Amino acid sequence: MTLGRILASLSELSPARALQYLREPWRISMTLAGSVLPDEPALRALFPDVDPARVDALHREFIGHHQLFADLDRSMVEMRGRRARLDGWKEFLYMAVRIASPRLMVETGVFDGESSAVILQALAEADAGELISIDLPAVEAIAGSTHCMRETSLPPGAPPGWIIPARLRSRHRLELGDSRSLLPRVLKEHPVIDVFFHDSLHTLEHQTYEYSTAWPHLRPGGLLLSDDVLWSAAFHRFCRSRRTPYVRVGGGVFGAARKAPHGAREGTGA
Image (cartoon, rainbow, N blue to C red; front, top):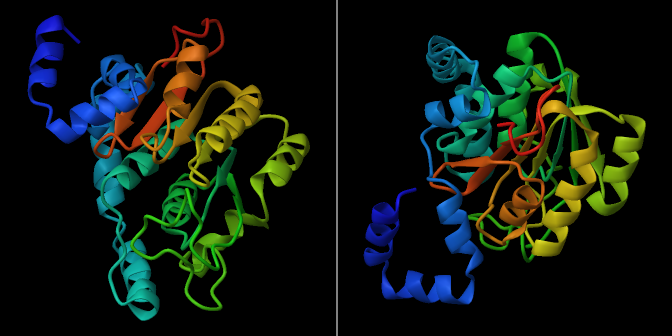
């Protein structure tokens, strides 16, 4: 980012945002670390060798999953009285998973399961891979996680991931409990994973714990994904400490970093 663009950005700040930057200066560092990108440039930054035509084909593939959209809409209308939301970073998530082609992906935080369904659809399209999800069921609002969401708890009697279509569940394994105890157990069972996706408790301490716990188990070239990277400085500081560049999509709330591939040093990957 050039000095001119930095000054222009600062001049456009509202008083409320300027005060936020003063209180949380890490946000300035995050802004300087890179712009919020559309899906295609973000994917090409993560995967420099990907063919732009493949990215376009994956976009069309995602929006062409009419059965997935219909299944999720039908279930969401019945349980929540609204349609499912698959815009923003969920399309990026789908395309990133398709390009990464994981044999094993681990996520924390499931809630209704819209993101899990998107991941499982990507795995089904590739006809390969498994998703292990860890979730502490939100039977009531959870501060630092669901308390700011449109619905703060699961529907009465519904388990995490209730919205995932039955046809996609064969590749899914759900572990119920706190990721502080379950994540190390899962990673001990599976010492090498291809993608880790954080979407559970968004506090500085917990996000840092999950990133730090999962990172050593990511294969070279594997992906670290995180929702709600603006809730704390954890994602920015973690990537900076590993000298690993990252991208942000979905209005800047979703972060993605790629571990250095074989033969590359950390700080030159992504």
